[in-house]
Each structure stands twice: as structure tokens, then as C-alpha cells.
Image (cartoon, rainbow, N blue to C red; front, side, top):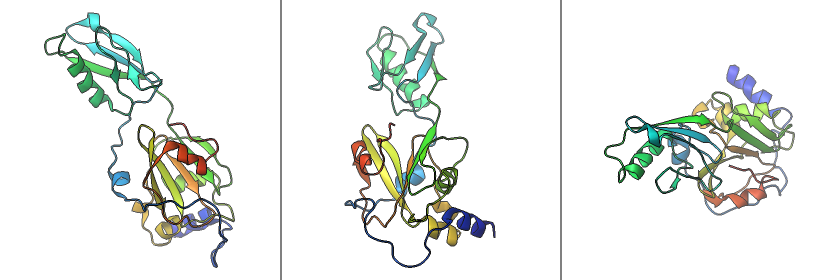
Length: 228
């Protein structure tokens, strides 16, 4: 009964029968795979403007606080600049150790995230209140739609698009059949959001969808284009 109530709440006044008119989101070329969405590492990945404290246990004179530049690099003391945007803290620690290995003997390094951008997600398309929302705790695609006010009467709940950063200027796309997931109780298909994810509710079925696309193509769905 809980699943049914959630389904009815999400659908609201959406048309349950018949065929919706043509139009909406442009079709693209490739149907997405589910694998990377299911297996992506949930740990926080560093973004531009984040601030890190880097501590050297035995050589404190190398301790430093660095800010991630817009191009994803940090300027290191007595070492070459290092690109860390998109990495986890564990990956950054290993990279810093490698960077200083030619200067220090077996450096022991700790990396602490001092300041970071507040996690968020975007919802656009056929929802009552499209916009940017804070990501607080576990939030699924259907949770995001609910937070954005639910579907409008013209929404196509069987063709909800999820866009996720895949590195650099590339985003990964996935179509989610929210109607099917809730009606059939397949809640595993109701994916958890990651920081920076964008959800787009279409007005009509979108046909084939590119699995990977340049971030600029999000202009077909969002105005303005989301900043990752």
C-alpha cells in the first residue's frame, strides 16, 4: 500500500492512458547501460573551489592549505601543480605522496577536506517547481521529483532522465521508467542521487539516448546548463 500511495502522489494528474503528443526532448543515438550508475563510488570527489589541508607528519615545513583552481589543479609547495578535481581524498593522498617522493624520503601525508561546496541536485522539465535543491542524506530520483513538487499533468513518468558527471566535460545519461519502478515495486531502479546530478522529466518519450555526451548538450534539456 505504501508503494501504491507513493505512486499516486508522484503521478498526480498525469494522463494514465492514451498516447502523448510528439515533441519534448530531442532524440539521440545510443541507449545507456546501467552498470556505471550502479557501481559509481559514492565517496565525495573533489571539485573546484574546495579547500584542502595537506599535512606532512615528519616534515611539517611542507604543511599547506590549498584551494582547487577552476581548472582542477592545486599549486603545491616545492612541487609541480597537481590536478585533483574528480578524485577522492584517498586518491589525492596517494597522488601527493607520489609528487613529493622525489623530494622527501617516504613522506607520510594526510589530506583533510577543510571547505567544500554544499552538495546539490537539479530537477527540470515537467515538475511543479523545477530548480536546484540541497542534497541532504539519501535521496532517490522519485524523492527528487517529490521535492520538486511532483509531476505536472504533461509529464512522461516512464521517461525520466538522470544526468551524472563522468569526468571533465562529459556527462553520463540514464533513462528511468519511474512509473514501472513504482507500479512493480522495483525500487532498486529508483537510483540514489549523487552530488551534482540532474533529473529531467520529459513531456514525451525521448527515443534513443546517448550514454555519454558533452556537458554543453544539456542545453537541450536545461536552461541554463547545469554547472558541475
